[in-house]
View 1: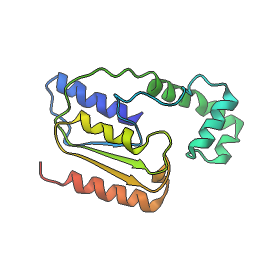
View 2: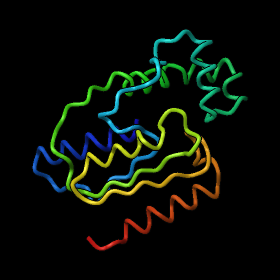
View 3: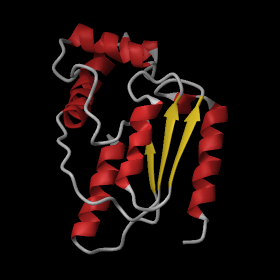
View 4: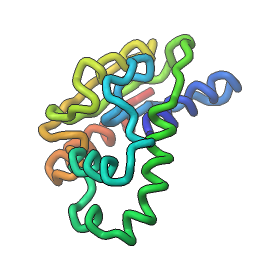
Length: 159
């Protein structure tokens, strides 16, 4: 969801002729122009949605098994999935800021080709970095540290 929000914010800033982002960082989300391959999750029955969350490997089992926590979090997750799954891409010229994309080599939700398609969304430089792991590759401390190093490198690069 954060990828779409930051992408659309950058486009809105351009429409308003405001200052462009210095760099756009995207993680684990197929390019906006790439159609979804998976069926939507946001309308699934509770038990099926919980099983899908389990497959994503990003929610601890103790949370998934806790009825009270799931009662609290499922509406939030449904809304997040719903916004992401019902997003409609409209074509506009590419952004003029660099885009760096990060993904997990074993991510079944956003593969390397779908991540590489972000290249079409910038007229500036584009980089893609793939890490061992699934959609939640950042749960691994080593990959998280490498990602932070890359972001820091890009953040201090001359404009």
